[in-house]
Image (cartoon, rainbow, N blue to C red):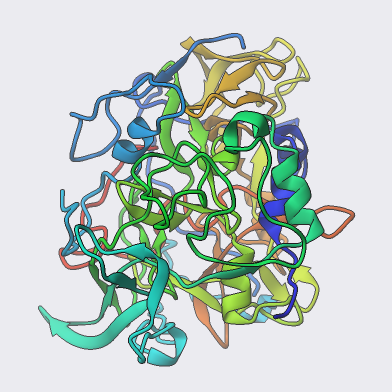
Length: 506
């Protein structure tokens, strides 16, 4: 089996400070907003233009309201238990049949006079069965079993069917949400496991029971002291202590075949926001947690020690990825030798491509980090390292900042995750640390727009996964990681996310 660069291994060995330092630097002469759910003035709608012309100071608190549709979730403070996360992360208004109901400048897309995009993308449509990893042979997971059954779960996507509902064409995707990853243990992966800050307690014997060259199947025991929801020989030992074991959640979702640009601002939220090509769930930046109900933590950073060696984990049984996974990259054959292929589709129907814009060229996020450490920075709070102000509008830096009584940890402070891991809260750790820099988008080329996408003549409008690359070639997640923070496309009653939310982080 081909040895690939495993992003997760390199990522686990990095500190949050190193990760966020790889982001674009903010324009210190400007200033921006991130809206608090409680305190920040209501933002005006953000225009869908300009688009890219080319291809511990405070105590951690969990949010009492973690979804647009459900505010009844409760928190658990039991050490090592992610019951809060598993409730919060999967709460959304998805229309799913499961047990959780609840580029070059000349290729720019056409823009109407009012700034709204008028094109419909029919390229890279979700109705192409060749894009999806279909299970045509009845293959079953070797270590994951169906609930209350001795039968193993079917892997990947079970079917892709074109259907017409209310005059719109969709792909109906049915999937168990269980992948069939096979991972070769490299020295890099092994080192990352050995260097976990809580390795002694995370592993039953104090260290992983794998060695370089081992090929591990999804769910195979590598020595973790896993959550008790994972049965012996049925997932136990593959996941770190916090997350629950994945289950067959029997997703069925409708993805528009001809996506259309939205006419209103719809925030992405918790839970399923689309499907990766192997049928696993796309989750967004949020892990449902915050400090002082204002500073929202980013799952790729706060949960870095809570994901498996493919960079995924489960909440309420639903296995998902919040960010780029080298296991997905190998599955779709993405080696950086050209424009990345499709990795998945969001609820609005637009494709998410991998991180490569061209051979050796990464797509670039146009979201920049606020400059807290310079007291004179327009995006800071007037005191070096302080998080005592919020941006009025994270899409318009010129609107300035507003003071908040719900201050966050300083850039030298700390945050304790649900799994008890400690992180330095350097600039870029929270959602509220970012703003969309229109000047970066205006550069064109590999720079993306505020939705983390752009258009080209071959693919139409599409999103990109975003990462940065360090000097050793390790790929580090870069905000907003997958797509968004808002949907570019229109949602409706049939789509996987069927309600337009104006609330950040829920």
